[in-house]
Image (cartoon, rainbow, N blue to C red; front, side, top):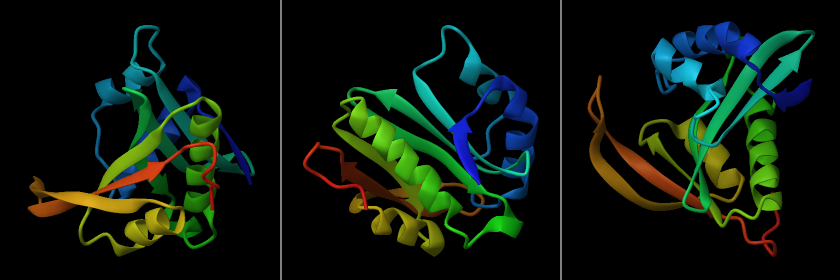
Length: 154
């Protein structure tokens, strides 16, 4: 398996994975198309690839000194192989090397596998947003992870 930066050519496979993932943030085509636009906000888009097939991706946006994880998806047939952990660690390493102060995200309260992943990689719950998600209505749990250079990425 290889982790690399995504390109515009990866968008069809990224969108296909996202559409199949019930817990993913579902974006429209325009939101994906802007990822590689010259005037787009600063983002990191990483993909996990195995035998030239994308099996996972992560997208994060840089804002005010921290990285916000916007979406992380692993293909259903490749879950429980450490792909999400590897994608997340790569993002945290790049963010730390770039001098970012922290990484943040929100996740559905019921998404126990994602919450375990985030906690395993050093994220800590920082609060909640009531009724943040729709279909079904559910609270979001807010997570933050310091990226100070003295913090080791687990």
